[in-house]
Each structure stands twice: as structure tokens, then as C-alpha cells.
Image (cartoon, rainbow, N blue to C red; front, side, top):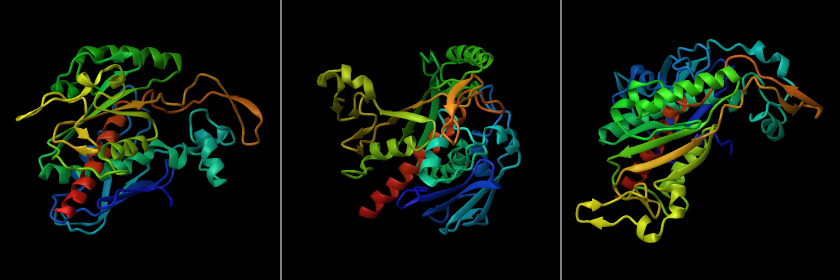
Length: 350
């Protein structure tokens, strides 16, 4: 198994490398009759495009989506949808000097161990550029969810040591960090400026909220909805942790505090994050992911070369300071893909 495919009834396969000719995805299982064209895909891709914030790389990619199959006269046909984005601003020669050096925090060492060969130009397949295909597929999944009145939103709740203290959904689109707390967003900007000057990078926390998800989605025992969300989100390269609902804070609660009381109108709290026994309960699904700092930093680090000789490395060039906010839409896309797949799986049973 190659591990490049996700989903059972709504299935995607991503392909491409950071410095190859392009990246893309094949979406199989999308029903016919969904309104679809390049602009639908582009709207979501533009949210992860390089150069959109002060945390972002200076690499200039238009990320222009091209649909090659599965769409006719503005609607999906029910056949596989193939989407491609060309790489136009890859500068591979910037990596020549470190082609034989393993970069700390990257997949260089592990890809070499697995395959015996690796594309050292920008990280190849392990590059965050691979997520272009996920986001394109997520745009298709999101179009399906809109017909079901299901909405998925993401927002930044922490960047480095700065944390959001309030939530105003309208504020998410009003600042470059996609933070629902505008005051915290201003502090985040100051933090990024300081860390950039030091040649370092930042991690953070992104929250995903899915609204109007019907109850009953998820499969016992190994395909629980929360397990599937955790797998999908953990498959994003920079994500190192996932929590559902109360998550890790549940360990400090008693059962009387963590349980969500049930009334005739529904659940009175949402510590479960909208999922009980691995199955959606009709409440909002709430997931948070921990995003590690970008590993490409100009601060000198200790490492070895491909012959296991000790050396030191300082990574120059065009790199994000943080995966946030560009990773937010990637998280949203993966959540959409999981929900659509399980929505279809549930309908097979009905």
C-alpha cells in the first residue's frame, strides 16, 4: 500500500512533489449534479496560497486549478475528478548545497530510510506543497456538504505563546492569522515579527468546527468518527496532536463535569465535541490540532550528512515562519473529506 489515498466511498488520491512539474488530486465517488468549476476550487486554494500573510514563504505560486475530468457544463458527472496545479516558482538550485545533508525536523532521514532515494528539492513528496491536492479535493467535498447545509469553519486559537481569549466568528476573516480574537491577532503579528528577526519559527493551535452534522455518522469500532478525524488531521505533515471536544482538559474533570447532560432540546454542553462512542450526536463537532513550528530555520543546527558525518546546517531561502494560517484551510479540507465519506457510508445503510 502506498498510503497516498484516503476515504472509502468518497476517495481521494493526491500526487506530485514540491519541485516537480505540478501537484494534484483525483477525487472518486463524488455524486453527479454538484455545481463545480475551476472557480469553486480556486476560492479554497487561494486560502493556502503562498504569500498571503507575514508568516508565509515568499515563493510566488498562483496555484491555478485546472480540472481535467469529471465535470461537464458546470456540474460533476459522477466520474473521477482530476485536478492539477502547476509548480511555476520552484527554485531547486537553492537546495544544491544541502542535497547531501539531513535537515532536522524534516522527513529527509526517514524518506531515505524507507525508499533508499529521496527528492531533496524542497522536501519532495513530504513537502507541505502536497496539501494543494487535499485542499482542491476539500473544495469538492465542501460543495457536497453545502447541499446538506453542513458548514465547516477553522480559526487560530494560538500562535506561539499568544492565545485567543474571545471568539467572534466575524473576526476570523478580518485579520491575517484567521483568529476570532482581533486583539490576540495584533499580538500575534508582533510575535511573528520578533521571531522572524531571530531566524526562528512558530507553532500554534487550530480549531475546526463542523456545524449541522447529523447524528449517526461514524463506524464502530476502528472507524469511529473521531478516530477518522484524528487520522486525517494527523496525516497533515505539521500536525503533531489532535483533541476532540474537551480533549486533554478532560483529565482534570470529574465524570459529573465531563458528561454532557441531555434535555429534550438536545445536549446542554459539548465536552464530547459532538461525538459519543465514535458516532456523531448532532451537536457541533469541535476538533483542535497542535501545529509544530516550521523546521526550516536560519539558526544553525547540528546534524549529519548522508554518509553519517557530523555537520551543521543553517537553512536559507524562502520558508514560512509558521504553518498558520495557511494550514487552517488544509485542516478544514480534511474535516470535509471525512464528514462526506461517512455521510455516504451512513446512507448505504439506510
